[in-house]
Image 1 (cartoon, one colour):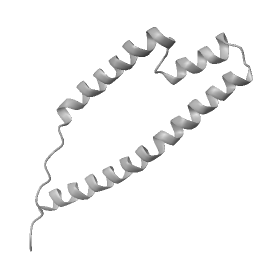
Image 2 (tube, rainbow, N blue to C red; image 1 turned 180 degrees about the vertical axis):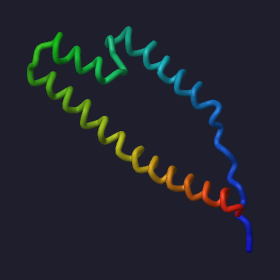
Image 3 (cartoon, rainbow, N blue to C red; image 1 turned 60 degrees about the vertical axis):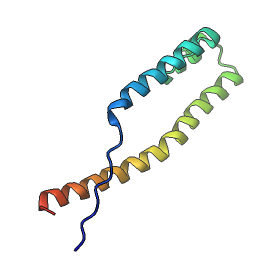
Image 4 (cartoon, rainbow, N blue to C red; image 1 turned 90 degrees about the vertical axis):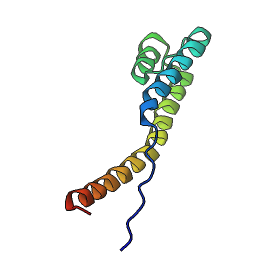
Length: 97
C-alpha cells in the first residue's frame, strides 16, 4: 500500500499582508477619485438615503447586489469542497492512517 505524498502547504502567513495591501491600494486610489466605499452596506445607505432614487441609482444598486452574489457563489462551492476534504483528511489522521 503506497502512501500519498504530502502536498506543500500554501504560504498562508502572507495572506493577511496581501489582503491588507490590496485594501489599502483600493482606498488610496479610489477614494480621492470617486469617493468610493468598499463596504456594500455603506454604499447602499448613501445611495438610498442621501441620493435621489432615480433609475440610475437603482440600476447601480441592482448591479452591486447581483455581482456580489455572482462573485460569492463560486467561493461558496469551493469552501464546501475544502471543508469536506479537510474533514476527510482529519478522519485519516484520527484513524492513524
